[in-house]
Structure formats: C-alpha cells, structure tokens
Amino acid sequence: MTKTQRGRPKLQDQIQKRDILQAALDILDRKGAAGLSLRGLAASLDITPMALYHHVADRSALLRELSDWVYAGVLRDCDPHPDKARERIEGLLIAYHKAVLQHPNLTLAIFADPLAFSGEAERITQAIRDCLAASKLEASARESWLVCLVDFTHGSSIAIAMNCHAQMHDHEVLEKACRDYESSLKAVLNCVFASCSQA
Image (cartoon, rainbow, N blue to C red; front, side):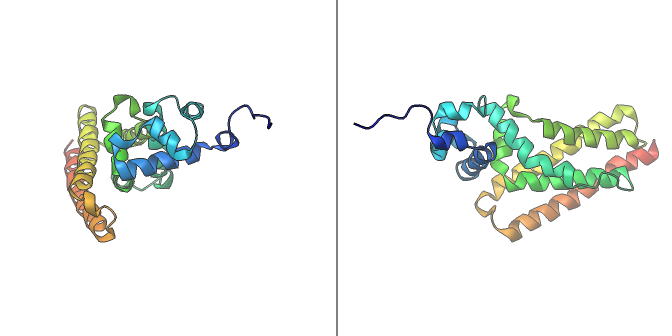
C-alpha cells in the first residue's frame, strides 16, 4: 500500500504571480470580461481556487493587479522631462491609448467594476494633472480639461475596441485607429493650450 502524500501539489507551490496575471490576461483577451472568474482561472492554471487566493484576494484585486502590470510601461517609457507640458501629456495619452488597445477587454472589465481601478491609472492621471498645473492654464479649468482628456482617450480606445473587435489583431487596422486618435488628440490639445495662451 502506497503512502498518501499530504499537502498542496508541488505545482501550486511553484505558481508565480506573473503566471497568474498572464493566464488571466489570456482569458480576458479570448473570452472577455464575463469569461474571467477566479475558479476558471485556477482551472486554467491547474491549481485549486484556494491556491489562487494565496496570491489574489478577489476578482477586483486581480483586475487592479492586471491594470498595474499592463499599464506600468506608460509612465516608465515616456520622457519624464520633455520641453513642454503639452508634449508630456500627448506622450502619456498616446502610450496609454496603445496599452489599452493591446488588451481592450481589460479596460472594459475595469470600467464594469469600480473596485478594480488601479494605482497605476491614478499615477498616470496625476502625471497629466501635474503637467496641466505647470502650464499657464487657469486653476479652475485644469480639472475640467483633465477629465476631458482622460474621457476622450478612454472613449476612443473603447470605441475602437468595440467597433474593430474582429480586426483587433490586424496591424493595419490598429495603426490607422491609433493615427486617427493621435490626430484628434492634437486637435483637443490645441484647444487646451490655446486657452492657456488666452489666460
């Protein structure tokens, strides 16, 4: 008679946070927000749900960590000291827009869950707020323009993701969508910074 081994299977002890995040992102990309559950994620990793809870508290926490992971490059890869506040804002928003389009279902999942908003998204927003504060824009207008810029970027990326869903892996379709967004963003920033010069 063989002795029964007690404790968690070895695989569960070896699971890394990065493995969990990558598997969750793969599920979101393939199945959308409705297809991501912790039970399903655990099954895809061949671990028990309890083992997964050692790494993530709940679905909202998982989405927050995914957001931090996916959007971490936005601030990291943008020039922190451009010549002008406008260039910094433009660079941040373009980088964020591209990150959203890489995994559009992540953004849709985050918007469906108020508890899922991440620290990384707030840091990006704060960086844009700081740029607006460094401009000659009147203090009363800064928050309105911040909301406008952030909502414009989210609206554009979500609209592209929903309208081009079947073509999201078509490089040319995405490139054109990004060019259209960047052109429109420049027009919005022209309005923002025209109001600066009139202040």
